[in-house]
Image (tube, rainbow, N blue to C red):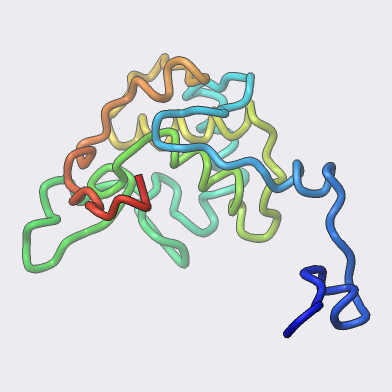
Amino acid sequence: MAGASTHAGERFGFGRAPTADEVAGWNIDIDRDGRKLPPGQGSVAKGRALFTAQCAACHGAKGEGGIGDGLVGGRGSLASAKPIKTVGSFWPYAPTLFDYIRRAMPMNAPQSLSPDETYAVVAYILNLNGLVADDAVMDAGTLPAVTMPNRNGFVPDPRPDVR
C-alpha cells in the first residue's frame, strides 16, 4: 500500500502513539540473569505474611496448590510419567520468578505489589521449596545467585536470531 502511514491513528482514524512514560510503565521485564531488577529487598518472614494475605487463597497455605497452581514439591518428577511442574521442580531462574509475580500476581490485582513485597514473596516461595534459608533476604544481588534445581533442564534454542 503505497504511501500508507505506519501509525494506526493516521491509517485507521483512531488511536495514537504511546508516550515515553506509558511505554516505560510497561518496560519492566527482568531477564534470567536479573538485569533490571529494581532496588529493594524482602525477607522470608515478610514474604510469609504477604503470601498468607495475598497468595494462599489460590495457591494454598503452604504453596501446595488450590484453585491456583501448586508452587512447591515435584522435585525429581519431571522425567517421570506424571511430572509435577512447580517453582521448585520446573522453574529455571529465580529472577524470572520475580518478573512473573510482579507482572501477573496477585491475579485480582496484577502489578500491585511493590518491589519490596515482590522480593519478599519470592523469598518465601523459594524458602518453601528449600532453596533459601529461613533468614534469607532477597534483593537484586542475592536473587540471581539462587541456583534453581532445573536451571540446566531446558534445551538451548539454536536459532541465531534469538540469542
